[in-house]
Length: 114
Length: 116
Image (cartoon, rainbow over all chains, first blue to last red; front, side, top):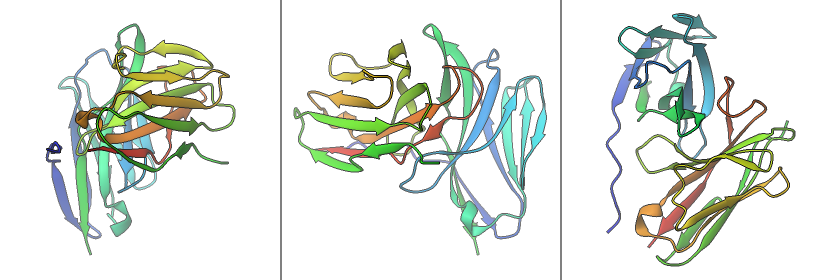
């Protein structure tokens, strides 16, 4: 029969509230991280990135925090809007099999309650 | 600026049949990637090209998957013969930067494959 995909972690927030999406990465040598947003039926879309020599970076309504000590990344979305409903992936640039690769995490589904 | 184009958007085949997906990257982007995204998971890299050369195909199941980018522009990904577990969305991405360097990847909308 058809295989069933893994159940995504979900986060439900009220419209206007702030959202925090967390991600644990695997490789302490990873030097670059990106957050992507993926809406249903579409490809991932770039949100914000951060290099490993930084611990915080801000964009428009979004902030990424990097804690290298515990290998943790978070995405904060201010004043969450219905259009923010999507699956959010963190990705790390890590070296493997002879080249650097952008490796994606499992994703978090954000649902915004109007 | 035109984005990454992929076709077909949807394909349904029976196991052991073959299928091919096509990708046209953003004009001028030297680096092209194919990712496989199984339902409920993050995209997994299959292969990356720089111009017409393969940079990394270590995660491509070479007994059934093949990919080419002969003229360094558009690319095709083929599966032959398909298995049930190949049901997924196949995403193509391109970048103006060298493989593995910093900078965003631009993704197409993907080709959804269902193997029955």
